[in-house]
Image (cartoon, one colour):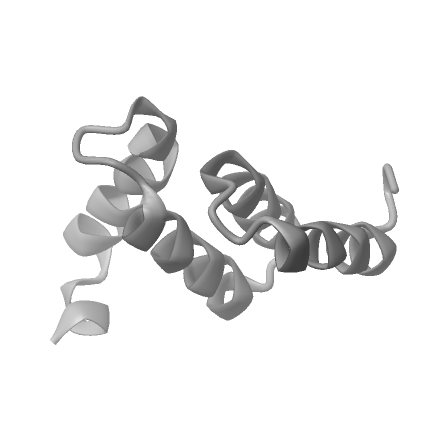
Length: 79
């Protein structure tokens, strides 16, 4: 699925139907959507990963870093 966001997303979502608690898979899918400039879908995946991850999960660091950057540059998105 390298270079094929649509195909890769379909494969990832098929896998996630079997194991929806796969935090890393949700984060990978979020990153893929971000690279494809599909921020709403990326954020949905990030939110799902956050809902499933244990407290202080290091896997979420990249998503939290992105969120903090957006909060600083565009606080209006979070009102």
